[in-house]
Length: 212
Length: 284
Image (cartoon, rainbow over all chains, first blue to last red; front, side, top):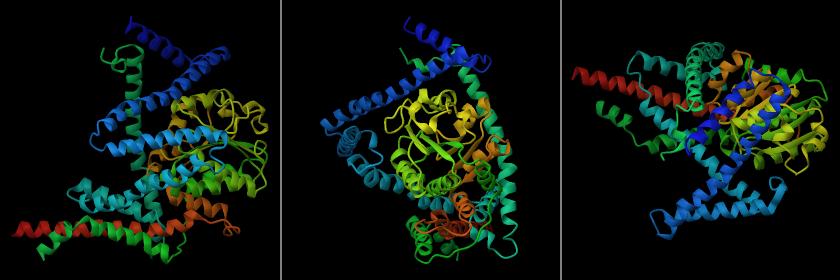
């Protein structure tokens, strides 16, 4: 029963939601909207699970003074402070000055932006070390990358003689080889997703139910 | 010579970092302004807004965070300016929990500049978790998905929402997307099912993924990264910005010039050193 009931629910809900694409009756849509709302409630509940899980995983490590316990303590304190500040600030928390907005503007924004900005440095180092025309395929990739990079900025368009042609060449690379490759990947991935979805609905794929 | 080439290829990466830092810092301190053309995809996005009659309402899904802010905030600001200037009303929501504190103050600021009233001319419905599930629900029934707006007002009592229950009721849906969930999920989940007119502004890294959607007609316009934002700014402000408005992407795109040239230079020099070393080793 512990395994059969989830499989039966998955099958029934899965088949019902697929039916939405083939049965355009409004009564049917009322029910699909209802199921979607249940799904959204479950998704919101996942935040509560995540909150409890973070405490369960990290609090014992802080108590035992495990490796990096200081970082875990900061994470837990900041999580709770931000959450409480958000509750206190209420519906206007994104608009008016309050502790929640202060934490967002002066802690989260600089940290988040800094992490992303560091990519510029790592990409330049990685491109210098790894981008080598060792064979024909690598040389083609290298040539395409350089053309797209230079054509994407005004400096490329301002080059004498070749400047006016660079955006055209870039657009051709993006519109023809890029699309051909990506559509192939999309179609392959979509077929894989359909197959996996059917396996879950039909109960052939059961890993999401856990080990026991 | 061979030793020098080897040393160059194996140089400490901190020198590469220093060069990159200078490539960004120098154009910031000494700006160089170069002109650029507007891409067909960005022009299509602009035209899609131009075709909207005054008084119509668009749905914006603002799904970006501080990390993608330099690429997408300039588009977001210029786009709001464009919409409000044309007297188009805005219904905004977000699928990213990081987004509201970032996008709401800008929405209020641009709306105030145009004398727009919250609830009548624009509304922010808030953040909704659930990713693809939330997108499906937006396609199905917006007031059910967002029972209240971000201020707690019941959605069906907000004047701007009157007559708009599903995504397909809006003449245009604009996805400002920094990743997952975003433009791709809107196209996959609801564009085909409801035959929606969707335009997208995305990060530069996502643009190649979305070009097939644009070419297939699933997106009516596409602005990719900072170059796309700068081109959109050029279309929205052909005579330059009014007082108090800064064209963030137009300024930043010229900073990118030297950064891109620096990386290209490193790649070219690295390859020259690689081939010279290989040839010297083969003949030795």
